[in-house]
Image (cartoon, rainbow, N blue to C red; front, side):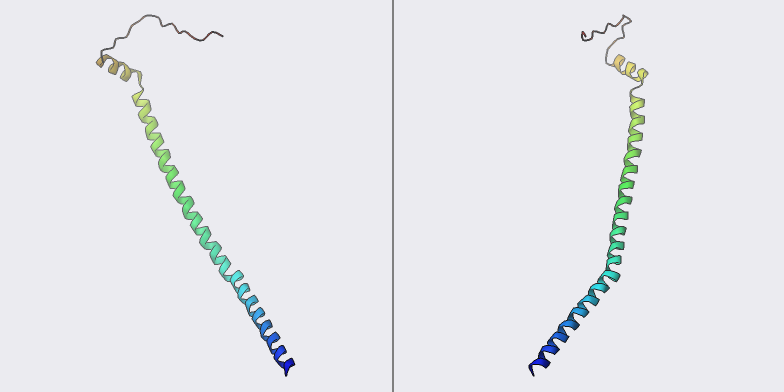
Length: 100
């Protein structure tokens, strides 16, 4: 009687191992590609959000560059200086630099 019980336990253990192998094979062949597709979609969405953010920043930088160019025009600076009470002198400007 002992031999039959041991053989049945071994058979059940083998069937359990085989079924676990089939389940893991199913997981690798079916679930893994789905998981990879979900991750790829997530990363694609993240990339698109970053690209939109970069495009918005570029547009803002271009607008600020245009504003800087308009605000730093010589005629505008002279007009503001005159309004503040400064006058332009026509004397030569001497630049003093460091001695080499």
